[in-house]
Length: 276
Image 1 (cartoon, rainbow, N blue to C red):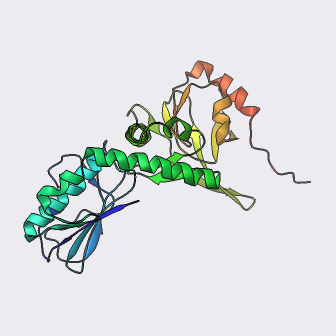
Image 2: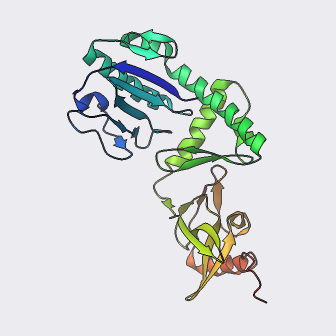
C-alpha cells in the first residue's frame, strides 16, 4: 500500500530540493550530497513526528518518492514538499497514481483527509494479515518496529477509516517517540545450546521502554542472572503500560522493593534443558 510519486528531473540538482525547511529533518543513512550528481537513495523522516521513513531515489533522469503505508500526515507533507520543489526546479509536473498533476494541485488530492484514510486502510490490512497468520505484524518506523497483533488490533479495528487512522497514528507515536524519561532498553542477541534468542535487561530504579525481545534478564545476585520469557513481565510486581504487541513502558522500581521483583522472577525463569 505504498504510494509512489515521480518527477522527471535532470542531474545535477541542488540537494536543497530534498531537504525541506524543517529543523527536525533526520536521515536514516547519509544525507544527500550537494549537488546531487549521481544516482542514489535517501531516507528522510521528522524526529518526534514521523511514523514511517520516506524513500527518495534518483535514477534515469527521474526523482521517485515513496510514501510507505501507515505514514503520518506530516510524512505526506514532507513528501509533497520534496515533490513540489523538484517539479518547480525542473519546470514539470508530478506523476501520481491518479495521473500527472501540476505541483500546485497535489494537495487537492493528497491532504490530511487522504492520509488518515490511508492509515485507516492500513489497520484493516494489518488486521487481515494478522488474522490469517495468527501472529504479529511489524511496521518499521524511524526508531523501532511497531508490533500489531492480537493485543493491540482489537483497540484499533473498529469505527470508520478516519477514526481507525487516528487511533493507529496515536499508537505508533507512543511506540516510536515515547516520553524521554523512559530509557529504551537495549536489545541483545545470545545463543545457548544451539538456540538463538534476543533479550533486554530489567533494572531497578530505571524507567524504560521494554522492547520486543524473546527474554528479559533480571539480576538475582552479584554473579547470577535470571532469564524470563518476555511475557513474564505481566506477572512481575512492576508497574508497566502496554503500548503495542511488543513494547511496554516500565516504571522505575525503588531499590527497597526490588527484592520482591527478584523473588517473583525466580518463579518464572525459562526452563533449562536437562543434562542427564
